[in-house]
Length: 296
Ligand SMILES: C[S@@+](CC[C@H](N)C(=O)[O-])C[C@H]1O[C@@H](n2cnc3c(N)ncnc32)[C@H](O)[C@@H]1O
Image (cartoon, rainbow, N blue to C red; front, side, top):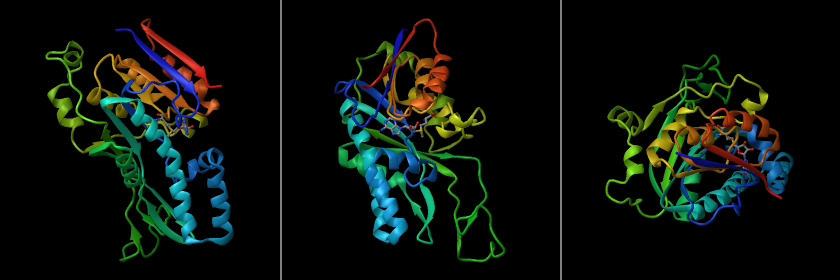
């Protein structure tokens, strides 16, 4: 089956290149709000966020922490809204997101990103479906925000639970997709019983992506192939179009190619392009076309 793939170097907050109701599935992992490694990206993309950080450092008001957090989610919200527009009726959206823990104003706290995104997507009109917990290899429990328990580590009540799971949130636009009886593409995309039993259970124990290649690859916080591979097979059929609005190193596109789906990805970081083209290129066969467009 021949498939078509597009990489658009520009922000997914406005997906001008995509028509309404033209995508069947979105699979993505955005930059995580309140995780330090993404602070610079959010601050550069939204000057308001940089101003709020400066205000927080200077005055330290609790309301400013809430405002920074809100502004980061407002940034992502625009992409969720555009995703809703471009999905077909019955199209699915899968978002891999981790919560964040952080000490601000001297207080250790949780930022429940999964809950905020769920609320935002509900407001947009998505229907929330049961989510998956991606259980990562366990790291050590935390005490006072540090990676180890100190002397009083066995004494209640001041230690914290470790965040060793990330979420894969699942939403649907509109009603369930309809297919003609015995639709060939749908039947050719069938999964097996062992696959169904494993994939449709709520906890997935998977290792994180191997992040050993270079600094650039580590910077994208790539998810393991297994995540988009399963989600594409679970929620789309061969020949469908899969969107990743936060493409990073291109893992979703690579797995869309391997699974005979067409795909579209958006990425704002020009420095990732060589890694992206290499990783996506590796998956191509003679029936694959890839177009890379730079937004003017
Ligand atoms: C967590 S990474 C994605 C990692 C990806 N799943 C992978 O396996 O490599 C998020 C990516 O979104 C990009 N990004 C941030 N804001 C964006 C926007 N508005 N439009 C498109 N890409 C954006 C970042 O540059 C970053 O590469």
